[in-house]
Image 1 (cartoon, rainbow, N blue to C red):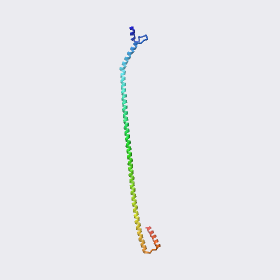
Image 2 (image 1 turned 45 degrees about the vertical axis):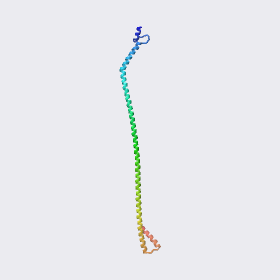
Image 3 (image 1 turned 60 degrees about the vertical axis):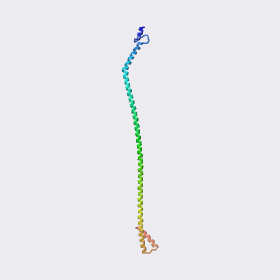
Image 4 (image 1 turned 90 degrees about the horizontal axis):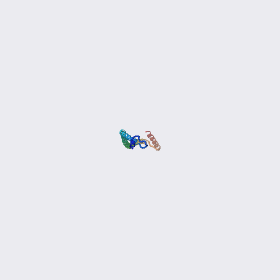
Length: 176
């Protein structure tokens, strides 16, 4: 029986179709040695590579997050500047419109003042011409009166002669 127990631990010694403990034990030892070798030479460097890769990915994610935040800040700044520019343009347009209205009113006022002055000057000139014409008429009437008086003194006038004389003087006055 001792031999049977010992055969159980020998690789491939069991022949009865039972469990081959030797093969299992050998496989387990090989597995443990392989596990030790893998953990020492493969998993350590592989874990280091994976840790470095994880850190690099985390750095990239952090950079992307910072870049996104910076882009958001820049977008907000640009929108603020755009709104300020729009407000400045609106202010400039309002000022330009107000200035245009003021200038328009000043031009209208100046034109009105000039036209009023021209009208006053024309009325003054018309009055002066009217006064000169009246003076000329008065002078002509005085001359005619003197001429008539001379003629009357020189000759007695009847109705027909008086009518002829008036027509003649009118005619003479029209010639002068």
